Amino acid sequence: MVVHPAPGNASGTLVNAILHHCSLPTVAFSETELLSEGEDVSDDESSSSTACETSTKGFNSSESGGSVRPGIVHRLDKGTSGLLVVAKNERSHAHLSEQFKMHTIRRVYVSLTNGVPSATSGRIEVPIGRDTNNRIRMSAIPGPSNGRQARYAASRYKVIEVLADGSSALVEWRLETGRTHQIRAHAKYVGIPLLGDEVYGGTKNMILSLLQAKLPIGRQSQLSELVSKLERPCLHAVSLGFIHPYTGENVQFSCQPPEDFSEILCQLRRLGMKKEEFN
Image (cartoon, rainbow, N blue to C red; front, side, top):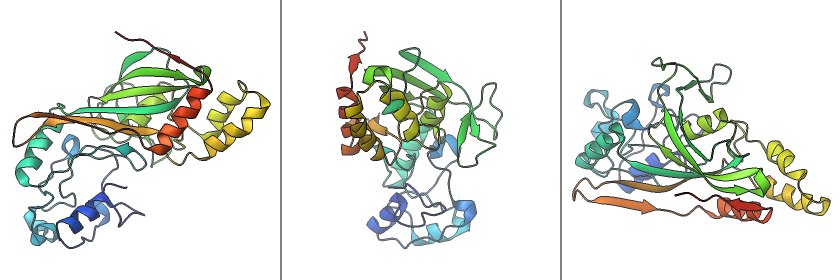
């Protein structure tokens, strides 16, 4: 599900679902109100609207400072599965937004990659900005961050399993910042684009070329069928933790990857796997 309305996705989004859940009218979104996919709201700009305590006037009146993001404090890219938290009132919204701003939210993702990183764990600290050759894609741009062109971004990764005799890996990611397409851009930067990520180089042809040479002819058709089922980047938000706005309790939620991710992981394990041990 797309998080918020954007060109080509005016309805059927999480924001639309929240408006319906709260019995609020559907909002017409202008081009200037449409948001960049994947960016944390509090990393980027403040948002005063919450899910269930925003009046109809608040959504439609520019004077009220109403936002098109009722309850949204962070986002997932279209195609990324997993956990996302939404604020149901103003206090929760302010509290969660501050946690995102201070980078104290605990977010863990898992991905399947084309290839294996040279180091089994590491920290990628490379600014991310809009790709000048492709406006729908972000790019990791080495050097100092410079505001709107490239913004500071940091990701930590760890290889959980090496799959298919070194042709792929199950990689865990922990975000220190929340930039648009951050994991996808950083994965591409270190040479391990995500499986199924046609925008960032993780094409079906790439994984086929990596795997086919290692398979007997009889199993290559099985591989082609498996890869043909890829319809999204293999990225899943597996864990989310934060301080509860009302109780002050540290809460932690987890969600196992959906069937499409799990099936591909299972098949890659069958192609050959060695497990990395970590302290």
